[in-house]
Image 1: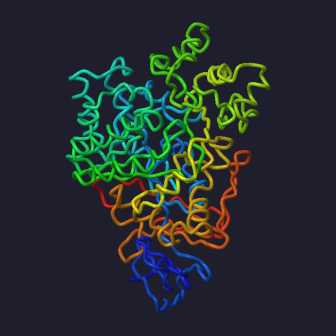
Image 2 (image 1 turned 135 degrees about the vertical axis):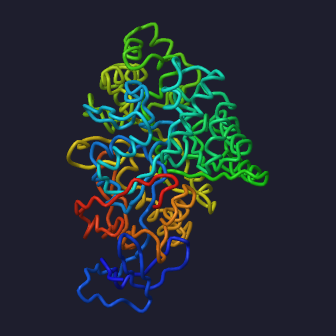
Length: 534
């Protein structure tokens, strides 16, 4: 077969954990068609010189919120420059589709830009719109349980009735049949937080019937962590669904030993027949939307009603009196450990702690939180903050488990165009380099081959992305070439947009997307639909 591109003189890590071996790769029609230890003569075929570099499968980010940002600008610069070639959107119960009530769905979408409008109704139509945006990376999508509630229920911030549960199931099944690779729940977020365990089990039964995955942001990871994790494990067992516990790391407020106890609970569930795995963010900062500070009742009725409450002294007092906010850091007034990360109406305050913001505004930091949300207006769901939530010891213990995946929990961004100036989390521009450099190379908590496996075949197999995440003949030609000695995360809270060093070339479906550390503009990504060839 005539080759389209050759990768020469590299040390190949196959993504399945085998030690590096020297081999040349031959690519044709978007696939790897030759893996030759003896080398491949280039002739007239274009080639990339991988001398001194590791050649690995393209990294797979199984937990992002890029549902809208990839529509606004599919260049995917932040992911490509760190070797990511595939990402999974629609996590934590939030997805762009279905959108039978487009206004409701649109206002809850993370990362939406000014002028964002929904022009689809079904999940399949959303995937078509995503494909038309020509993303530079491959994209697979989950259908969000919160979105299903918004479309099905008149009052989504309450337990669903029997007819409503049946409606949620029908919409979920339709989305799965139209290409969603699974369902996601976000049980700390409105409106998913109002769901009963039985509703979740029934949703998971729909996913299980089609061998689709359930990913879950569990209900609690601090004081009531046993309830949150136990609910997810029960759903996995009762529904027989493949389950991924998203960003499992215990949060501030969990008792000592929680991470070890979580591992034990998951082990017990597996022994009982449940298919459960988990992942972590390779960072001690946990990001989320600032609107998560609001209890469910304060989010009812959409953005106009939320803004009314934020401006009403009585409602504000009730919000601040919430005895169990999503972050216990808030209840304990640990404002030095909470940082404003993205708030376009107050961009000059980004990167400051809320203790600092309180001093600047001469106001109680909690009031500053509510003021900043109100000042965002219609874009309040796009404002994000960070908390110093996780401990090194917990992260190390979780990553020591061979089935622990690694994720960004971010949105895909670019430094120019429609996404210029947008921020989401400290992981956006450097999470893969941070993980491989810190956990594998410097601290040697695992081999480099094992670190690559966590980012590639482990991720692909967990999400059901056949033919990706590995270097072997017939696999998709998604590749990253990097220098492990130069690999380093350069992003900071003050300057988060700095891409890592050491990532040299990236290939997506056989096309060179990054060459010598610069994006080429190639748009070779594909929308990966459940049941379709990848």
